[in-house]
Image 1: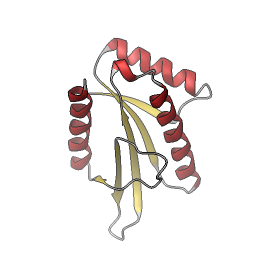
Image 2: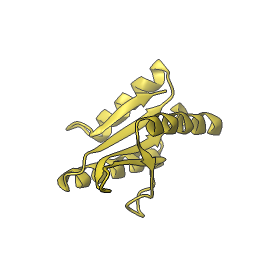
Image 3: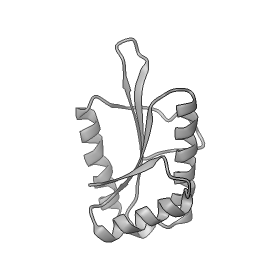
Image 4: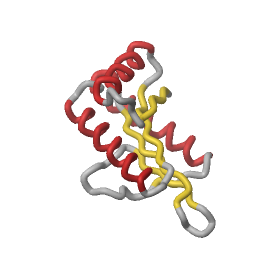
Length: 121
């Protein structure tokens, strides 16, 4: 299980590096995402941020996952208020059943619509 979780993170990191993102420190001590990456301008200003929480099927409906997703959503909304383009991603394995569970989880946590997108690898 841990190998699958880690392989998801490693493969997404590689893709982010190719797109010009750099893995950086978390901005808040209360929330630790699996991946936090930024793309900076030449002058050092933040162009875009990506916050990723990777989960496998067996941990999707755990209390820890729900807390992490709620904190991620709050962080994204806070950054958007500061006019920083921030994307939230729930990274899951490529599996139809896992996708359905992830969609159900996000709908139950955020009935008004989540700011978090689902990505499968």
